[in-house]
Image (cartoon, rainbow, N blue to C red; front, side, top):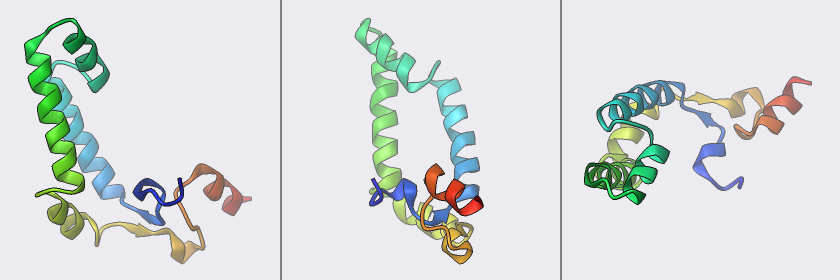
Length: 100
């Protein structure tokens, strides 16, 4: 788990805030969260199938596709380097161990 990007020492607070805002807007427009979309797809709702496909494509594009350079260039400089505080990851156990 330590190799995942979500537990790195770079804490991208600005990216989390903007990403959460965009996620909330998208889920409002898509009439529910990802779990609700999956339930609706299972029930045969075609609108939810479109929402699920768009959500998957956008997630991939943000992590590894066309939007990845934008994410890195815009939010990279705004991230907080936890290694400067001698915290090696964003894991709760690492942060709590540093505080104690």
